[in-house]
Image (cartoon, rainbow, N blue to C red; front, side, top):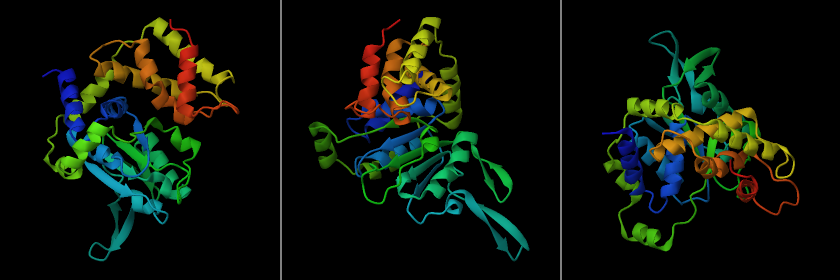
Length: 306
């Protein structure tokens, strides 16, 4: 079975759980294939947690979920050493971060101190506890969900942490046909227990290596640099993309190309992943009259194709 066939089966299986949201499923998978972390921002009840769980199960990855609340402490996330009389020593009890897929549910309901505890784990794939560095499992992904910032009891994520997320997506409400399927069918959270792993961690790591091998031509890189430069010229955004964001954008485009069974990146791949990859990193200039994603799409329309 080819890699593309496995990836296609993976998307098809998750689409039976998250009905009518195939583009968002593909974005989520592209993010993981590119080795990035995913932020899902939307109102409660549209399937954010269910999508994260279905992804983990379908990829055969060890899954852990943390409900972020105002009283959640960093030690609740990374773990703590407890003195055990029988051993007459302190024994480290790992926290839920020691998983292959960590679902940080409603991440912006926790305080800034707990939010920042994720930074080292997301960037370095390790945590430092009581002076000792402990590696996290491989692969390691954070899938975080957050409610809109205008809801009560939320704390905006700092820019440094937002930049750690390769993509930020929204699910939105289902269309009428999809909602009817949800209303008349089986509970999707129960259906997750019947899912079978389509891939295993070794398959996933092989797919990530295949992403790195996807070719980006010189004209494509010229187009990528033109897009990055446009974010920095002051016309569209207050501050432009960093070099790290540019590298992340290229990785996401390569993953998108792989999902389309191509070994090269096309301009369409960049355009398809650009809003999800960069909008959460950018702030539109005053008076733009558009949201972040709408401003990114307007910029895309204004930049000539190679």
